[in-house]
Amino acid sequence: MTMSGSDASATTLGEASERETLKRIFPRLPESRSTIVGPGDDAAVLAAPDGRYVVTTDMMVHGPDFRWAWSAPYDLGWKAAATNLSDVAAMGAVPTALVVAIAAPASTPVSDLEELADGLRDGCAALAPGCGVVGGDLSVSDTFTIAVTAFGDLEGRAPVLRSGARVGDVVAVSGMLGAAATGLRLLFSEAVDAAGEPDRARFERVLAAHPETVTAQLRPRPPIADGPLAAQAGATAMLDLSDGLALDARRVAEASGVGIDLDPGLLGDDVEIALTGGEDHGLFAAFPAGAGLPGGFRAIGVVVPGAGVLVGGRPFDERGGWDPYIGWDGHGG
Image (spheres, rainbow, N blue to C red):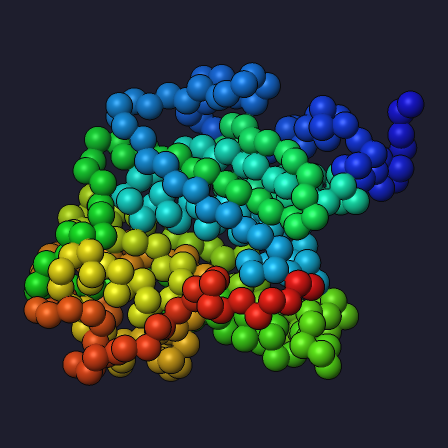
């Protein structure tokens, strides 16, 4: 039976077959310029002119990673793209393709997945033009989960690792520091009910009052193009700022066997949230002293002898970021 638009939009995953669901989703997904064989076979085939490819994966789970009371399906698609694209960029590579797997409750409207696909499409178009979705999988689960695997092209360059920072290097960031965390702090303080559960009505009021702040959390805009630019400029180390500046800088320091001294005067008005807030998905990189900083990179410190992270010359021993095994409050929403 052919459904009207309104009836079709109300169809749930439990009512539609996987085949029918995919027929509605595929036309909305972005195409990759690297595709040789796209969705429809058991696997996609991608061009790899460099002879190598960068690959990464990231998962978003309802509860610890997002709340439906605060995120629309479109937001989730955009953010799933952004978080994976930034990991590819942090290696100095150009994102080329995504594979997306979703497990969702049977009661989920198929239209939600269509909106999620639109978010993936628009996120790729805005952040990494030419990157597309080349395949994936659908399954059923009581907990909505989206897992994305991303691929990238090094274009003949060496990958930029976390382990190459050297004493005397300048450390720099591209992108925002603390904007997404400021949005999340606002949601947890003003978009919850008396029991601390995410509340949709309160969320709508917060979004209307603080659209840019909330959107920084729900739809981050990482500077994807600055990853390859950093590699071209001779970056010695780089990573995606997903969990917090202090925590992520410590990862570079440990991998490189050095210390990293951050200048609090270069971290903005709210130093605490710049150090500990995550999910902006900007890029943190080290560059040789005297090198010109490319794109939107700005200096925030220096690589020094020793170990760990310092702020203004003083050791910073706090965790300094997000750990899902420690930070999740157990709420859904």
